[in-house]
Length: 80
Image 1: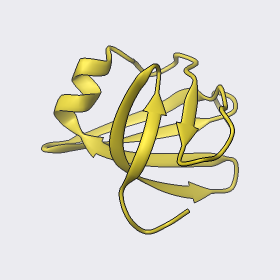
Image 2 (image 1 turned 180 degrees about the vertical axis):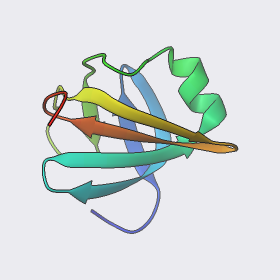
Image 3 (image 1 turned 135 degrees about the vertical axis):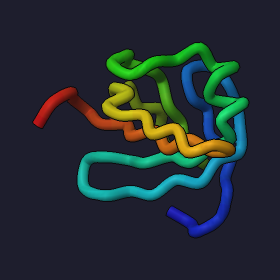
Image 4 (image 1 turned 90 degrees about the vertical axis):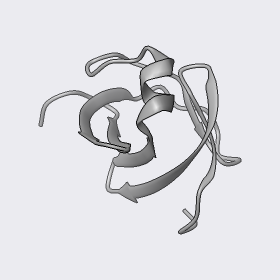
């Protein structure tokens, strides 16, 4: 994944965000306003497309609000 913001489809919303892959998880940093508008919450399974990669359906495994941004952890399953 590039080290710059990229277009991400998250739960049907298209937004610019920064994504970092690590193992099976992807952490996405986006503006808190965009996260609040999405209506998504921890524990939900959501459709995600990052850049031109194929769609995936991970779970929102974690949310860390650090205004003015939020880090959202997306994982193929909940728990460890």
